[in-house]
Structures are given as C-alpha cells and as structure tokens.
Amino acid sequence: MAWWFQLKKERVTLQDLLVANLDPMFVENLLSDIRFCYKESVSHWVESPILGEPEIRSLTPYLRRCLVEKHFRDRAVEVGHTATVEKTETDSAEYSVVRANGIELTISKTDGPAALPVASRFREQRSDANGLLQQGQLFPVSVDAEDRSRITYAIITHGPRVGNPSEVGHICIGFPNPTLDGWAEPPVALVEILERMVLNRETNAVVEPERKTVQPKLKPGVVGKAPNRSRTEGKR
Image (tube, rainbow, N blue to C red; front, side, top):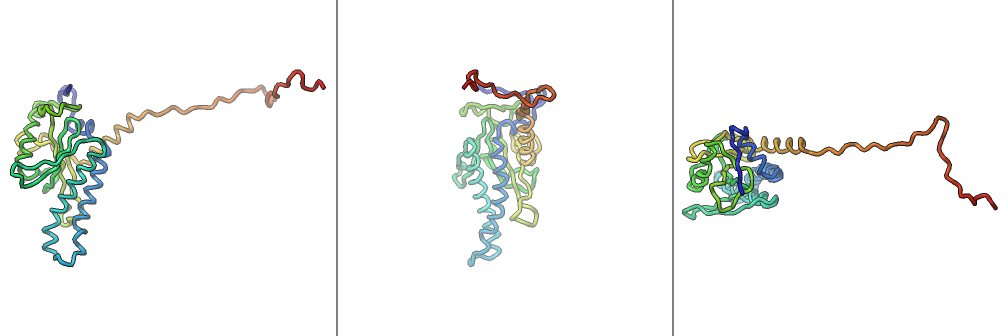
C-alpha cells in the first residue's frame, strides 16, 4: 500500500523522490547512451553517397529521437524498470514510457535546460497526476499499477550543444506542473541526480572493521615452546 511524504514536514524534495526510486545504473547508462546517440545520429549519414548536407540536417533529428527512445527503454528494462511503447491519440506517432516504482518518465528534446517540451496531449494527460505535488505530497514507494492517483510524472529533457548537433548540450529531469505550462520544481541536471545516488551509496556503505591478528606474548628470552614429546619417545 502506498504512503507519502509531506514535503514541508519531512523536508523531502522532488530530487529525493528521484534518488529514492530510480536505479543508479539506469541513470548512469542512459547518460552515456544519450551522448552516443547524438554522435551516431550525425556520423551515420556522413558516408552516404546520396545525401547532401540539407538532407543530413533534416534526417539527423529523426534518427536521434529513434536512438534515444530505444536506449531509454532498453536501459530501463535492464535494471527492472518497466518500459512500454505508447501511441498518441491520433496514432500519428509513438513514444516511450518508463515506470520506476511510483514515477512515470518520458524523454524529449528541448531547446534548453529549463525549457518545456513541445505541447502534446499525452504529456498533458500525464501531467495531471502531478496535482498533488503542489500540495506538497510525494509518493516515493511502490504503488498499485492501476491507481493513477499515486503516480508522479517526470520528463527527461535533452538537447544539442549550440552549433554542434553531435554533442549534448544538456540532459535534465523535471516534474511538470499539472497544466504543463511550467515546472513544479526547476529541472536539474541528470548527472547531479547520479552524483547524489553515488554519495548516498558511499555514505550508507557498511565498512567492515579491520581484523587484527593477535600474536601470543612470550617471556623475554623465550623463543617459543618446543613441541610436546610423547612419554614413550626416547625410551628405546
């Protein structure tokens, strides 16, 4: 059964929710994969004999999106998170949804670290679940898959470096407000979430105490006891 934190009472932030529910390996691998996707989406077309620069510029965003969505799902499944492919209401496009305990995630390209993705019906519908965030409630543990009132929705955003589409400019994560016209809390760089995860793991690690070997103490001038000889030894 789900339970929740009161933000003000327990001083729990939305970042705490991410740290508590996302698998560190998912975050670490996704960061690396997105960087790969950006490089591959550009280099893939370079050797093509039938494409010019205008065509490459047009195709690059499509390939990048496909690669990012695929790696997003794959990395989630590897660590035990759930990943599905959903269709938009008009069936004109597909998008990936990852579920990690009580958090639903989608991933989108944006124009900057603080920018929202392009408006879409599926994002608006999922953002409705974040109404309780404005009341200061979080749901950091596993919840019933059918109980959408216990789900929070986060968006991972990414975008290219200015002037270089093969390099990543930002990879962030944030919780949109219920009307999808702003953020419930400003997005944070995904690498900062990973750093907090690593720090928590190091802090909570149990350090085994050093085992000391006890050496027997001998009287001064005594090298050691000779082994006991049997009573019959030497009586020959």
